Image (tube, rainbow, N blue to C red):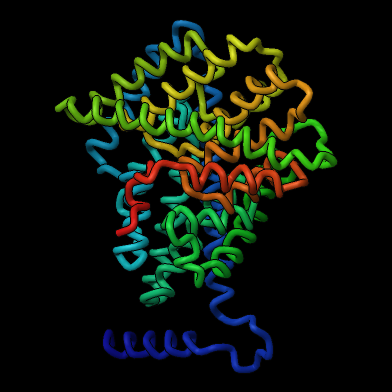
Length: 421
């Protein structure tokens, strides 16, 4: 009986592998697979966000000096989860698996990633949920591909589509999320996996709809900037100039992070000791500069609405760079896209104090684009993401700033697996 059942299953799967012969359109079975993956990605992202919001609200009860022991305990618990449940890895592992492991993302450590990242992000770490979501939804794509017996580029494309669905859910930008899932894989040839763009777009669209119904995020710009009218022919030059300054800050961030990575690597202790140390340092930073706590989803709006002085803005830049670097290198889990946008927004406000005659939105968005493109090597998706997240309609200046940050980035990439080999 078992052999007969297996033969029947193989027969049915072979039938499903065939295109719908009665269908005269491009639409086919593969569209349904991509759509299903997008639905799964949206549901997973929605559930993750609900739990994260709950934990964040509970952790926010502890402020003032209490934030130090709170983040220390959160770091210790996250480290213990990683130690006993398995190390889920970081973005480097995802990129390497997509490029060199036939697109297979192993879901076995998703439990560790979900639990540890919820603690790290919810307690106030300077990393966002986009990293964990990309890994979890990407591995869901790999799992679905294995179930459907996909191989080669089809399996790789489904993993990439899963990554795109997770990223899109949080940012509410299907096109930007799709391009990001391609660009993050290889900085020198951004379209190396161009075959995955349509699967990524389909999965992103379905993920966006489901997540929007659950959470209502992405239906409007995440951060509101004053209206901007591109009526000055020198605005492109201003965008490039501001991008140059933001790229310098990007270099500083990269090498400060590398310094702390070397420092923590010298600590020959279990990971929970490192995450504990990181939690203590992050708690101290948050005590003196509360706006640097969390991954800046709401803090960017608070910063833009504030009337902070130049001295305070400069201090926040330094504190936030330190906070992100410690979070990344001490073993805390999360993504650094939104924290980088926070740094760019802060720098833009700081620069605007010197040149108040130049448009504030142009200054801010140029800095946000350049620093992110410099660190992540994603100029195309950065341009579209920022246009969506800020409501900045004239995306051409953002593109100029993104390309400036991209081409002036350090030759050795921040994400080491984005190298040429």
